[in-house]
Image 1: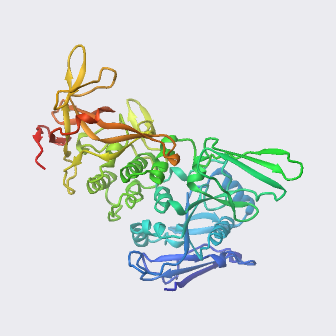
Image 2 (image 1 turned 30 degrees about the vertical axis):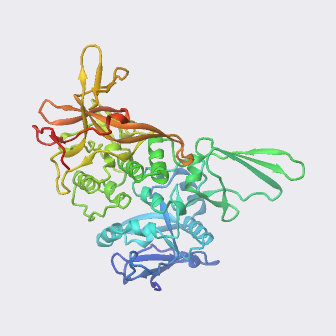
Image 3 (image 1 turned 90 degrees about the vertical axis):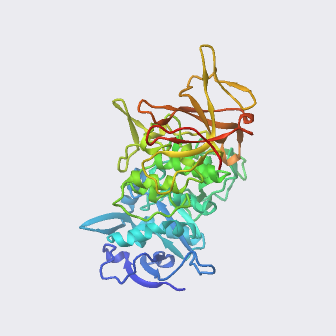
Amino acid sequence: MPGIPIQRLREREKKDWSYASVHWTPGELRLITVSDVLAARDATIILSEWRGLDFSKPGERIPKYATISHSWSPSKEVERLSAAANRPLRIDLGNNKHHEISWQGLVEAAKAAQHLQCVFLWLDLVCVHQDSSEDKKLQIQHMGQVYQHSTAVIVMPGGVSAVQGPEHYAPWITRAWTLQEATLSPSNVYVLIRASKRDPNYDYEMITTGPQYDIDNVDDTIALSKLQSLLSCRKSGLKITKVDKVTKERIDVPFIVKCFGNDEPLITALEGVLSGHTDAMKKSAAWRSIWLRTSTKSQDMVFSVMHLLGVNIKVDYHRTRDELILELARRTKSFPSWLDIGEDIPYNSRFGLVPDLPIFHSNDTPSYKIGCQMVPANKFTVTGTYITEYDIKIKTSVDTTFEGDLICAHIFLIDQNSTYVSISSHTGEKYDFRELDHVAGSYVVVLGDAQVYGLSHLGLYQFAGPQVMFIGKSNQGEWERLGKRTTIPKSFVNGARRWHLTIGGPPGSQFTPCDC
């Protein structure tokens, strides 16, 4: 199915990119022809529209295109590079608003796409009608499919205006939408970086603690790197030495990766989605990212991750973030990975077991107000442990909103006296919590089997045992989640009775033996 050309803009015309007077169809896939952007004398955007294309239809002929993953806000280095290039391209956003990028970065992206044998390029700023709420809603609804079915994803961490070196900070990883962009097709995700072509007079030696690392040069100045490989190099994981082929002189080549920042919870959540070896682990990492990333609109924290969690929620910006988060939790209850976001996160009984949402700051780090201080949400999320298989079952109706969570789980009474704090199994075995300083409440609820991981790309996992949370009654009489988590012996779970109980919601819930 060929695309239908609907708009053309030449760089030499020095005009804004606009959909004015263009015959376009809401929600359709639109792509930029790579060869026209790379025209030797006159870079040109030719936008074509694929009408009636159905990604889900078996045998559908999908064009070979690369998608661009970027941040609208450029890094300081990209601002410097694009200013030096002096090739501005203004995007019409409507209501007399504009967003400026650069022909320089667009051409570099097209070079990378061509290098990856892609005929077309998808860039949201051009391929989505920025002055049409109808088109935006429809495009967001199937955005996951756009990235999932692309031949390659090209990450431009500092923004689409220019390609920067990996040694410069970039805001890419903090943005809500970039998570699904980078993880829906993880084996085809590349980071476009500024890197000189290797000198043919030298041999190059690489020592890495991560996976085999290769830099694939597109031309003399820019190169592609696999996202997972570049992530593994962020902590001095790559040492490059070039060796003169004649004199054998050895010269160390600096290779510093700072483009992902230094927020470890944020980075390890991305790694968890990319490298998690179970669906539960990947989805836990995706849920953690909702608590850690930001966007312009709070609702995007749900719309940007729903496809990763296998849910399709109608795009409606009139709904609140609270409503959308709860719907997302209810519709993913078979994998209740929102239980695994972190420890010591504040809880609100109205939300049941879903952690209290951090305060949303448009385009800034989410946080909680603790006392008189604002504390970043990343202080509460877990970085080293994942529940890989859930034992607890959530029985809450999909349509339930603020009425707590009905659970089916193994639950054990905490026995406390002046000398010990313990639980007992159905066979009389005791497990002593004496070594812990965070025992709280009166019962423990088994969540599922947990594993501790090291470097996820190396697959270093260690079984930690069945993980439990502590629960107790609030002053108002409802059951609530308390404190940190810990693990108990596997033998306690085997053969033990299961119980139903409602956590959060109205007070007065009673334990009921499970007959599921």
